[in-house]
Image 1 (cartoon, rainbow, N blue to C red):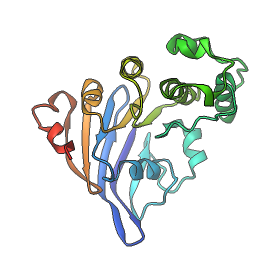
Image 2: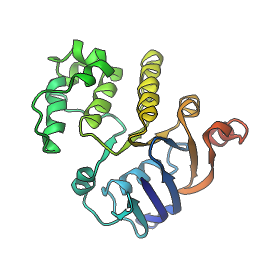
Image 3: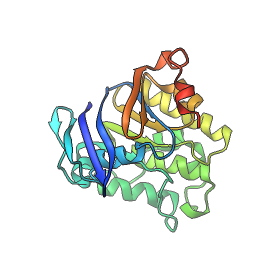
Image 4: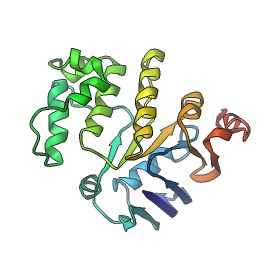
Length: 231
């Protein structure tokens, strides 16, 4: 689904990504882990076309998208749930979802019922403005907003940040359920080790902008990944 080869990116004189390569497969969760400032969000911005790359190649379903604009990547079926959620605070839950549907030129007018089945709290607060939701509720809205675009690749940037434990479990179950459907690839960027370990089929650890270690998600404990994330 997604293949990145030898990606390099610079910010001023800093070499922020160094020959980064990874693969995200359909029906699997690929976890990208690392401490703050190690290049995770920079990598995602390059994937979405928000930052230019100096060299390397990004392929999506066999197509070279390295130089594509962000909206072109979204139209291909790539959806990002950004760090900090970035929902529209003055729009209602329903309006946040409908604007995402409109952006992908869907013929459907109503929000699909499965959205509210997946995130019951959104149905309860469907008329509430996004800015009036709790952090956990906003995160669920941000994920739902990405899902209504019917993505082939779902990218989540630190979805557990600032979220209460019970909602983290709900989000974990949603991501696991999406992976089990085997219709999309999921790229999970995360610092919270236990959350990533529960979900990851494959993992990649970034350190100072380069891949320090990668492997099978089921071997994260044996591979000592937790120690690589320690400050």
